[in-house]
Image (cartoon, rainbow, N blue to C red; front, side):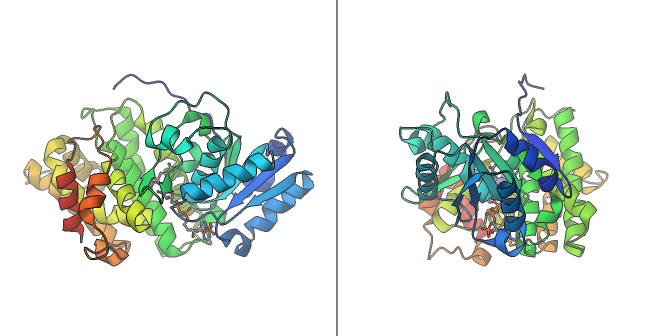
Length: 390
Ligand code: NZQ
Ligand code: ZN
């Protein structure tokens, strides 16, 4: 394994009833002025808004609402939130939602305390956060991104057509409250999309060196098998608490930095999805489900050992009677079969992206190239992958 420093400062309270149980005590030490950040209103329909605002009232907080955070949050929305947070002099941002609300809130916490060009200094370029962002507490209503336990805010700049995220430890939420029951009201499509996003994170981390036995990949294989099992069970019965709670924690485990330790990671598929998202506003998990198998058929020979291990350890495919190439491809086929089984899109056209409405060459040229995976792509190959996905 490579050398590492492990640091993850987010405290997590998990399980049925955890918001009522843990939020009041946390609020005691947080100052008087709270910004309640949320999305398009699902929390008003499922009762979470009522529960949280009652707790805030009982704690005697002055509450400023920052609502309407959209899926794939924009930088304009971040600036709106930062302006509001400054004006109201808030002591805490309480983010209630999925990845978009959590990401936007972390970005607001940073931008509100920074006088320069935050986009340029923290998103377009890797910056140094040598000041204290506004403290953030998150209440997760949609699992998948793992945003609750990292310092990343993935933000879309509509003007420059960039969708970027960087992980700043200072932006980690102080507390993440994770009640699986809060996710029960998610529409099936979003539940599946989030579950697949978790599997994608695990694969992006898995397909990087070292290739020999190591504990990060061992844990990762258990998580991948778990997310496949729990997604199947959650589709069969969306209110299966055991499956939904396990699915929720698997998402967190993928992104709390633990299975990344000592490893090089890929995340090129995420870069390709983010570039597409910046141009088309597509759903994150659905963009990934289309791209993954096609991308892996391009690179598997560069990481043959790990792709063979993926086939045997994650999908249970016997190695006997197969060449390494056949085994690796059987693993990728199993992934593609799973994507079809859970009803996720397999073509860009299914999510409204066509050659006519999207300049794939321009999107490919805007895509960030990562160097942590088995092979760095070129813009030409990225364009080719997009075209094969049409
Ligand atoms: O807007 P609201 O009302 O909250 O509705 C949302 C939204 O329409 C709805 N929803 C959430 N919880 C619900 C619910 N509906 C009913 N009941 C509930 N309990 O679901 C829709 C999608 O929500 P969103 O937050 O956009 O989904 P997700 O959690 O998949 O987040 C996606 C965003 O996270 C970024 C993605 O790029 C995308 O912008 N990512 C963040 C990462 C991170 N911070 O580490 C890593 C990921 O790879 C990803 O890039
Ligand atoms: Zn993701």
